[in-house]
Length: 289
Ligand code: SAM
Image (cartoon, rainbow, N blue to C red; front, top):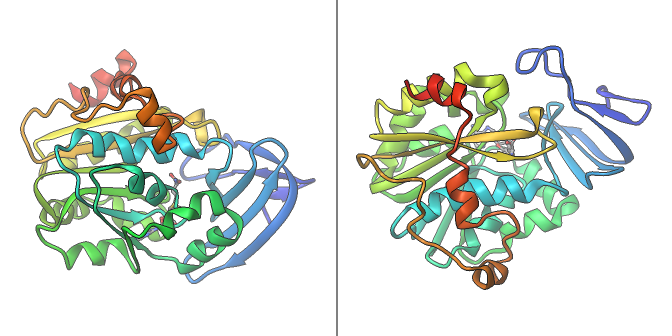
């Protein structure tokens, strides 16, 4: 394990976050291999539970993953009037499938993940996330999300892109053409939601992604959630609709505390939903003016 020294994993990534790195103390190394697409590491940490890293970038830890998985799923699902048919692109740990399956209006979940080894290893080492693959609503396809999108038209109500960062196999999922394809793959009034990076690190990329997506979608917003094991401690989502002036801030479906308990949600509430769109002044001006 090259990015591991003295039992510390260091998330060094000179292109995406030069000059900084988050570190986790390792309790036990569980697995490492090079799949056809990427280096996969899984280890038990001292304080963050089990961690999955792809090409030395942390994808999730069992301590804080629910913040990301619940928010990338429930933000778009609760904005849509009737999210019956959902597509997940990426999401090889199964966490997003687990969350989407909880939503009472969702009938069918289709997922396309490029790397079957991430899926298999998550089933082995991250069972609390990979339980998403057991949902009877789910149909998993192993393949490239970009190519999959080309083959679908007028099919999905919501598309969630739970990709790794824009290096390696995920590069195509951040391109303008991908938004064009997603627009075609959506049914009328569809919503897309994609992992969009952190505004402290990626403001220029976020702005570009939003600019590209607004060529095909009429309402485009950026929302954030707190995830301590991601660089800068938080991550954002680019959310878009082909309808004009959709009010993303106020969810169409609202769930009370006992309903959220029944679904097993720990992070998402309607208030958290609304506040996710509130941005600090400088980044709001930069992204929207
Ligand atoms: N929550 C994570 C994050 O923000 O870093 C992402 C987690 S999930 C493990 C990311 C998945 O996207 C990986 O399993 C990776 O194999 C998959 N992926 C990357 N590029 C892809 C592509 N072109 N098509 C489908 N899946 C892709």
